[in-house]
Image (cartoon, rainbow, N blue to C red; front, side, top):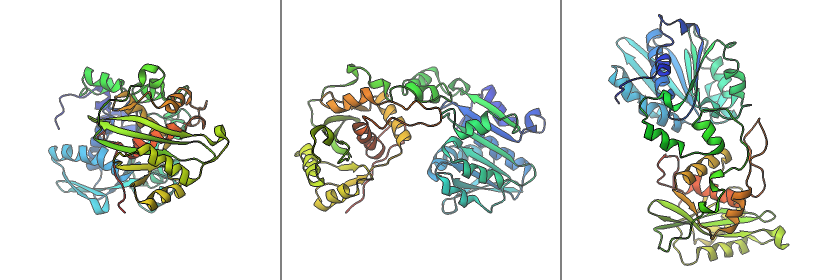
Length: 417
């Protein structure tokens, strides 16, 4: 990887800890702001450089939401750069350990996942000389505090980076707003702070988001969710006719309900674009009669028709319906991934980049898109639990079955029976 130039903020990140820099007095560095603003790569290089200059035979932690995200966002892009700078890097996958050496200096950098409240237990007992948190806003406060408490070595420092969340998020409240009292250097990044991004690329990223996600990921603001969840679907022009072709792949997504509505969507892929072709939507409250698992399964088969269905994803809480589908052995079924906010962001992205299209034959989806709204809350990101059944099955499809997405955060997989 070649670097032609750095922005002023990137240079600060790379040099704040140096002996000749007056910013060295800080105990921590916080970098937040827009996506693709160059903060993660510079922070990673700087973190390793600082550790190798001031420590030897020491242990450090690199923390992320998941081990996979750390390897993807940190290890893969940064290790080649370090090697080109003269460091010798060895990564042991089995131990989640990066060992870096130069001359007679060698330090160890362990990878830790901060995915939930139980993660704090995995980092207990270790003594650290420093810790870097990649996407710290996605980690629970208990994990972060436990990792910080492990940094008892003289001269240890804390390194944080993240994209913004809602204003009352614990990290925004406890670290960004209290940066001075915690002796932390705070830097806010925008895309303009990354000289490797051209004007055309910045504009392309700006087109991927709208509403709250645009304010957070493009403008880098800590803002509350508000208004309609998918503003990009607020006009009739957002919905398309069903292409009069044979699609190269078909799948179905299901949000199962007995008292609540059941919503199933049939999806077809054409030239890398997925279309919601038709749907099944049954509201027992509207009709006054609940349907059984078997009746919903019959409707599922009718929706599929004679098409070859590669896989079906179902609300993971619908255990009896999943069992019924598997027992009939007609379709491969995959329990859906059910992270609501992450899923909404992913749906918004593929709607904006036109790799997901909703056909105007799907009237209940069209109705819900116009009604699906955020709760009026500063303290959390929560959509109102109304008019959300087609919205949920669309989200299940995107997070669980959609593939070949350019951002690389979707995967297609199923269990074999």
